[in-house]
Length: 288
Figure 1 (cartoon, one colour):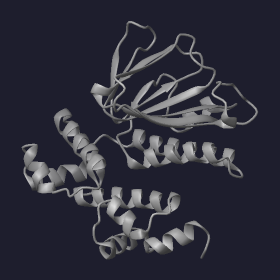
Figure 2: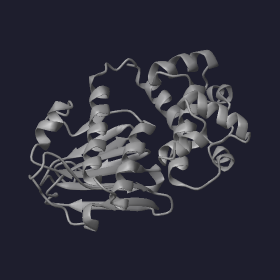
Figure 3: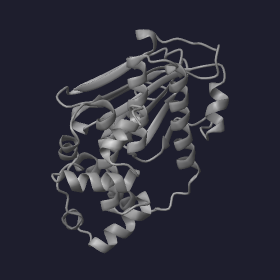
Figure 4: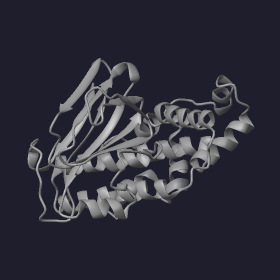
């Protein structure tokens, strides 16, 4: 099992704090690889709020009562409020990957309402997005590093996540066909998982029984971008993280994200971000 977590003041104890409008208490991610099952049982709930984002696979939630079983699939978020009964399981067989954040504050309910999360909402569809994952990872990093003003940065990052959720909830669902939507979601997840390999969009479409033109047209309707543009954006976004957080050379990072030719990698990075990888790294470190 892969896990990465961060806790405010290194404390795993949940807490309620109304001294500020919004406070992030902890954040983390779980990905079941070898562990067959990961259960959570809190009959009295917690003192804080929790958002769980199912980024891959599915998870089993027992809302309200232990005997209830609701399967929540990738692309959905679950919200638990203070003192709500909590029972849920992740299974390796479902290839579950989740991100979660706990938060409290004196104005949380109004903030959630402001960003479109109504009082009766428990599970809401937001789609899968690398941007969600980047925000969760940044929150984990802030909690682990505890740099200056990190608590304020955590609030900003959580509000960023809520804004993206609001935009998704406010946007009409263009694709109404369940089969079509599942196919496009599956494709997006496949590209996220395999972005650093040699992907042939035509072969992928054929493997799913779709013509290439039909697939590209509907994938763009679902994501707002073509399959290759989507793959490139995932590669460059992961390259950004490596440039910011590692000492790998530009050539090494290019290979890690799927580009064997370092010049081509630099050219693609510059086209996407307006800087070469070297310039981006220096800018991030404040050297320019």
